[in-house]
Length: 358
Image (tube, rainbow, N blue to C red; front, side, top):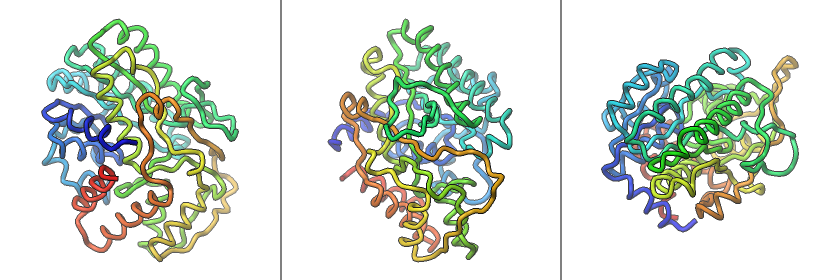
């Protein structure tokens, strides 16, 4: 990817009003930080950060952006926040993002990921200041056939587990709003974005392989892996975020051309098993022991999943910059330095600059 494509997109956010749901989460905190650094006026709407370590708190984002604690299921509060702020750009990232938790609490998962998304879409529909909406879902929105080919944006939506099903449903609802409302408004572009398994520094969520590795290493206990042979399209958090940013600016300038659905994932050659990823983290951190889980009652999880990103690469000229080895190296480096007492904000800023300049 030509680095000027991303840099030009970032420059266009200077002085713009940007509304981000889910800004206290992993991807949301990185996106909020990036846009605040380039001079955007950012407002975030999300639940409080998770207890314990939080990228949002480590970056001191509450002092850098307009920070509002709120639940996307609260339609009235969300609507008032959007209409008061009058954003020009919207990124929707708020979600219940975990497969395992979706099995434990399907009602909350469906309520948040479906009805919360409806609330967001309906507020956007009625707010005339908005020029661009990027509606983030997941690669798990596809009906996973466990085949070797990457899924294209036109492939069937579905989902075995409640999380995946909720994301497939959110995509169908987005498509309805796009065709029923947004396409007839020539002043707004709207797109859904589907990314692969995103990793990087600052993720402290439970039941995700990288933070699970870090917690186990800190506690000096084995890293327990549920599905060692499951493959995923691993990518650094900056990869899909760069796609979202480029897409957002394109939507604002040429809404009819760029509205629709887009995949942002690594090439098929970058797909690795869960065990390979954990082993690399142990290697780069020079600590840790891997243990394969023997829980025979664990829930179903997909074994094979990847995306076809030809559309993004050919039309948006977006391409991943870091391969899986670089991704794992920079991820381990972030945690290693933070755990050694270095500033998370400084490390995050350095890695963003490195990514932009390569």
